[in-house]
Length: 342
Image (cartoon, rainbow, N blue to C red; front, top):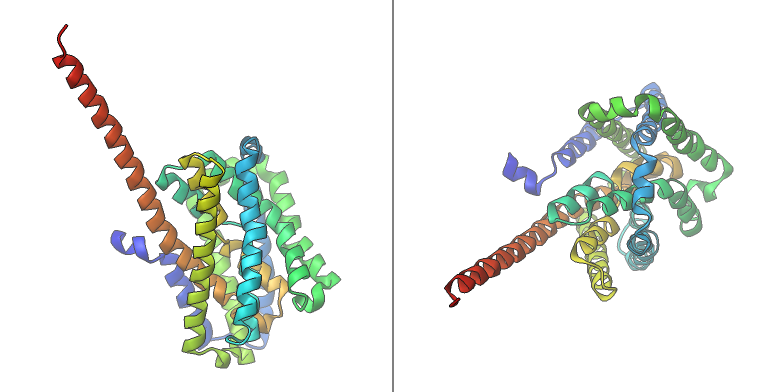
């Protein structure tokens, strides 16, 4: 199992199982109404917990490194959307409209928090900067991602009507602000019970996925998906990730960042958050379209884990090799000094 975890995210297996469950037993009628209410509660709970756990000091601590933060921000909310526009334009003749929308939607999302920091740590990168970048990305993304969706995907939410803005305020912003306000009271308790909060986080996402794919099954949208569609999404997701990783690596080196800073930039600037993306999609897109819209994001999530796990190990191996080289040079110098005549 430890070896399997290196290549397959167990949570993705749960997500896959949830999709299968929704395919076999979709929520219908009264069950669908109950599921809609439960999804609203789950999304609000998700962002409440995130607000309660996010320390404002963690954001301000890394802001002094403005060049690094600016590059990560530009990669997440400028470079990625430009790539998403290009890819979605090219995929228009290959994929159903909802999947094309999903490719563009994932490019507009904020970065992940946990995996960005974890991979930066494994690779020997600048962890405080990564923590700040990922936190700011998610905080800003709560507002910026819906605005970008309104600008670039005008069909989302029926032209991003006032009701959509109200839903975002009530289901995302308000719970987040309340969580921040409650942080002095419950923040320490949440940090001591990370396993419990992790179950709540992931369980909420699983439930949202079940509701979204149930709606898709009832509406019959999955009759539009073929093996060719899935293959195309995998290839396009991989292409988007490869371009961003190559661009952030090249820019980091051209701009003279240190290797630890480069690692933080690459891992924070190339990630997209499924934890934020799926709840947002349930608000911004029609229920019948959500399952196909989030499919590119779900596939991208697994691809980024595969690629970044491999990249993190390579960074770590290079750092270990440099350390051994330095230690070897030091030992050789000591030997030479000992043999030298007095």
